[in-house]
Amino acid sequence: MNALQTIMLSCAKATEYLNLREEGQLNTKQSLQLKLHLLACKTCKAYEKQSEILKNMFGAYSEKQSKPQKNEKFKAGIKAKLEDL
Image (cartoon, rainbow, N blue to C red; front, side):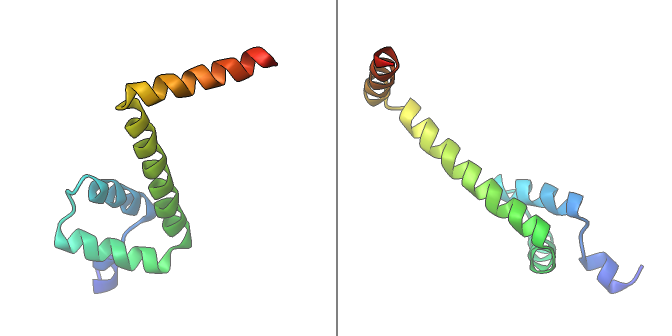
């Protein structure tokens, strides 16, 4: 196996590493391999961006869930709008 094969990741491994990075479980070697792969692979770079968007969306959703008063107001507003239809 040559050095390039040792360093470069498959797309499947890159997505696994993206998930590990999100969980804070990526070591230095894996992090470097992932960075190199993302530089070369537009598809995995797009996956990384989509994952970030989803993470932010779910983070905002869980924030709303942790504030029940605001969440109840929000639900009541939606219910009133639906009833007006």
